Image 1 (cartoon, rainbow, N blue to C red):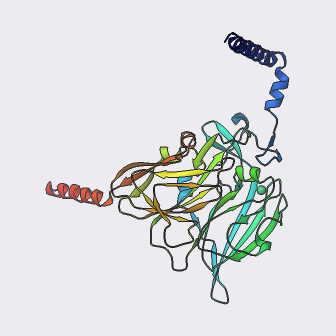
Image 2 (cartoon, helix red, strand yellow; image 1 turned 90 degrees about the horizontal axis):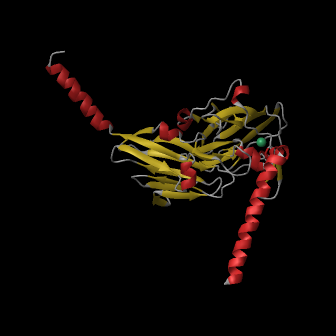
Image 3 (cartoon, rainbow, N blue to C red; image 1 turned 120 degrees about the vertical axis):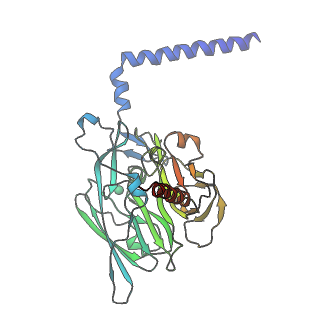
Length: 362
Ligand SMILES: [Cu+2]
């Protein structure tokens, strides 16, 4: 007993000495410690050394920052420039420009060096129908090599892995037949991959089935995160880049209307992400490749680049949360609200108001 209490007392004393020593070091050698915290080199989860050019830049020195509107992005689909090929099939042409020098205010007062496809994170949502020829004119206006690697079926030379596209104006044309039907990510595939993805070089590629899908209010949600201090841990989490955006700007939908959400998990550094919907359940089609849903649930878990299609209708009007059920993620920004309106009720109210007005002869 005596010896054990002696041991715990000595551990306490040694701990105190250690704390005092470390704290004094901060005052005695502040420059050394400061230099260490400013180091822009980090070791990735796989043991690779990453030298990041990303910086949290003092807003005073930022002349202009990139604008991004998550509400506009949500329902914005790029069907490309279409034409008909001699065999009667459709050709869709797109231009995607990569840059890596943009600064974006991702949260009030937090500025981050985003790497972009067509000046946004995520890049444009490319959309085609199964069997269409997709032609992507890629221009790399960045300061380092970049590519576009599409998930899906295509020839090896179109995979965007072994064909690095040079900095400052390098060009490459990706051409392939769209397929299979579903929702797929695209992203840069230059090493260190973690860095190129975490900075924002990704987007969504939707391939519609030839027979189409039932009409719906369609939207895209890319689940992502931002590591603003380069320690390979995310400081912010979001659906469509801006933390808490859809909580402060709820997504307006209607009762008894089919909602279809194309969800893609592009979160770096964390092995999983998830999505929980309140007051409802959704049909879930993993990767969107099957026309029959695999689940009817209110919660899905996804690893990186896992994706799928959610379909649901709200029966009752009101405000409903959707968020990561991993509480750390939702508390750091991955949370939003669906504001469900009863269109029929509103129409009834409008007509009764008009009726009242007429009664009074106005
Ligand atoms: Cu890249």
